[in-house]
Image: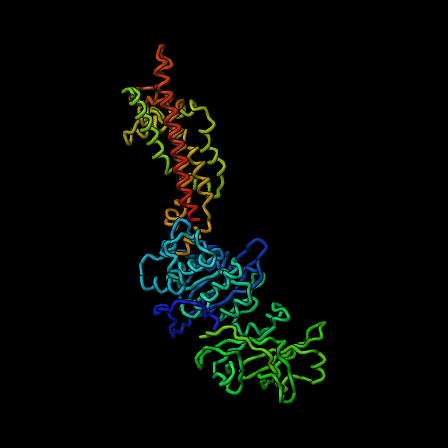
Length: 383
Length: 230
């Protein structure tokens, strides 16, 4: 388990994810001219789990969430959160930030220097709810900091207080602008488990801006890729990850497929756990602590997948899946071929050489065996 | 230690300067905030107007006040008719004169204080549900406190020393408008009162020094509190 650090037992009854199924969506359709950047976005985001906004610096990620928070006003367009209209230029509606009930965790924490941690946490909540307060403070592990001033906190602690402060207003949505970006590596590693726990325990939809693929893999359920102020692709992380639009963003060694799987059983002798992709496709991964039936996300690098026409026998490779070729993608000026395979309901990419592809005479629709050399678990708490 | 006459001048000086600063402080904060945070056409005009008393001869200010705020003045007449408020030849007039003269000093310091407040913190407060007014009183003002304190005390010290505008506008009436500088002027004008003039001179130096020390001390405390926090 990734979150196995020392952490106090949780009493998060009120913030626990309920089996609430909302059909609420965040509808964004805005235009804004920002210097050289023409922001023009039209996208619907689910109001559940973590949605990650991904793109390189200057793509308009922060501009987008500033518009969502109400800190900046777009030139024209429409934004609604479920039933609530936040902005509608046609009807001259613009809710100021204080009326939106949207929490915002800034990259630089922005704690108020003249208030203690306690004062910061209480700043936004008029109606005191001690139980909620205790839940959040415990979840973020900041009980021992309450009487300190922000100046004496480490970067990671500041960020945790900022997250708590934003959550205590009981927001309908939480915006996070690269909360890890300004931290050094040890602080990142310190904060990450809290974010993972947040994703698991808190029933507030989160829009998470990042340019780190690793953070997306570990946290996000949904992702939106933006480039030069426009939405390139949006959807479930697994499907966006496997999409052609995503290819240019992944360096050759990072090219990979994301698959969701269900924990099945532990190997009786070795430290391995079998997970199930579909009713007849299984993978062995390093031993997991999850209960049988829990959902996890695994990542398989395209370079770790090789193909054979006949079922391999007496091989050291443990994971062999029967797959059907869905697409053959030749890369220009390269001796590599990317093969998109269908395994049950999901897709798996394999990178092979042009020579191998020619010799095996692979074509769309063929059945092959995919031999998988390595599988890593990236998110262990898919709800 | 102090004669009754000196005590009267000293207390009157403190009262006039104190009331002048007290009443101009809200306007000073407002003007400083407008200059620090707003962009509008004519901003440099307003800036110039606020700073004008800093460079004008005080006698000109006194004369302009006489023309506008005197019993026969444009505004003064109106204020007298509607509110029965009169400035000429009263301590209220003296307070008005010193307020005008000390105003630019106050605005300059408060503006610096306000400009040092990070707008990002105000934005964060807005996202936490605070109205612009709440943000101003809970974030902007407390963080600008060192500047506001410095501005207030500088203005107070300047008000204590005001001479030209006061004597032009409200004359030199013992017990009503005769502050320490004016009383000193009277002694200097009177042959054989060098001793009395020297005593007042020492009193003026002592209170000026004291207010500067207090100012330094207060803003150090305020800064320390913020730095402990930053």
